[in-house]
Length: 306
Image (cartoon, rainbow, N blue to C red):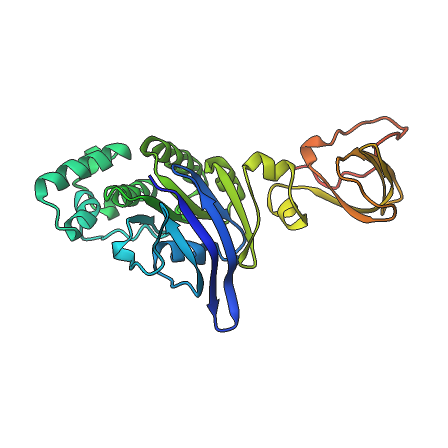
């Protein structure tokens, strides 16, 4: 296991910054998900960790040692690609053994390590099969075993479930999490799927425009998003604009653009007439048939029921 630290990491292509001044610490044994829309910089960050993309500036430390000038094949890092990248002409055993053979390990040790890796992903009985004879989920587990067999300090997963159907994705996200916990390896998981990230990660790193918007547990980010982007990207919310009427004793009164007035408990004071945005999570709303609308009750019309 290893701790990982990204320090003011930047990657530019010409004048365009794919990743800009990104700093992040990842603890030993932690699974962190880099989450964000396409083009936010999450895959570029993963590629810099793997050594496939050179940093423009900044540094990456693993267990306190810089790896920014270490070539990919000399970093003790395992990578699972979106496409799995299995060798179609090699059996499951030989696919998993490939990295060990590149390290000139003797055949006896290779056999023992491959068996242990396949046991970890519950594929011991399929070591003689070829990728084309396996399901997508099984191929995914072979790719995971191949990454783990070299006993890396860090495991990188690049959109590992995007090629699976919905039911298999849900199953595999929990399998990956169980394997990661069992092995205890520090893991960075890249995805654009918020439900996937929330299901597997110890912490989420929400990214946008090459930088970090918020870091925290799924619960913390969902319940206390730092800005409107995070609010709308994580979960669903009804967004209402308004302005502050008064704010004192942790109670803030807000007049909405609809003309309704609501009050909320808030530890941060607001100035009178300050514009605000209210994000209402749908599971926190209650539908009532009461004809009289009092405190924090808004009248509305149902457009659609899913």
